[in-house]
Amino acid sequence: MTPADLVLTPMGLRFAGRVLPCSIGRGGVVAHKVEGDGGTPAGLHEIVGGFFRPDRLPASAVPAWLTRIGPRDLWSDDVEDPDYNQHVTAPHGYSHEALRRPDPLYDLVLVTDWNWPLAHPGRGSAIFIHEWRAARVPTAGCIALSRSHLLWVAQRIVPGTRLIVPETLAGRGARKARRDLA
Image 1: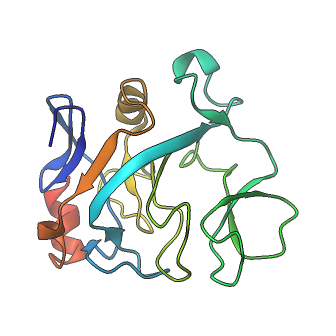
Image 2 (image 1 turned 180 degrees about the horizontal axis):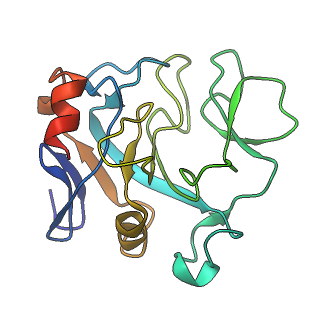
C-alpha cells in the first residue's frame, strides 16, 4: 500500500493521510461478489474513469479526465447483455442503471475496474465510488462518500489510482461494517 491508494478500513476510506467516513454495500464486504447481493467486493481495484453531471457540478470543480453524463448515458447490469457491466446509451434493450439520476448519487462517479472490461456475467456490475444518500446508509455494493469528500478525493486521484478493499473485512456482517465505517 502507498499513500496514493484508497484503502477501506474499519474506520472509513483512508486516503492521503485522512480517513473519510463512507458507506459500503448493504451486504458488507464480500470475498465472492454476485450480481444483486449488495456486497462490496474485496480486492485490489483500479479507478478506470469517471463521470459527472455538468448541470449540477461545474467542470471547473472536477478533474478534466471525467466524462460528462448526458441524458442517454446508462450502465448495463443485465447478465444476458453482451455489454454487461459497460457504459451504454439509450435506447438499450437490456436492464440498466441510468447514470443521469434524479437524486445526487451519481452527480460524480468514479468507476472501478471490478469485473471490467471483460465482464463475467453474474459477478457484479457498476461498482463505483459515488455520493452517499446519507451517512451510514448502505449502497447496492459501491463505496459512497459525502459530496465534499468525494470531490476532495476526485481532485487528487487519476485513472489507475488503486482502491484496496481488504478481504479481512469480508464476512463482518453488513450492520457491523456500516457501524464501523461511520
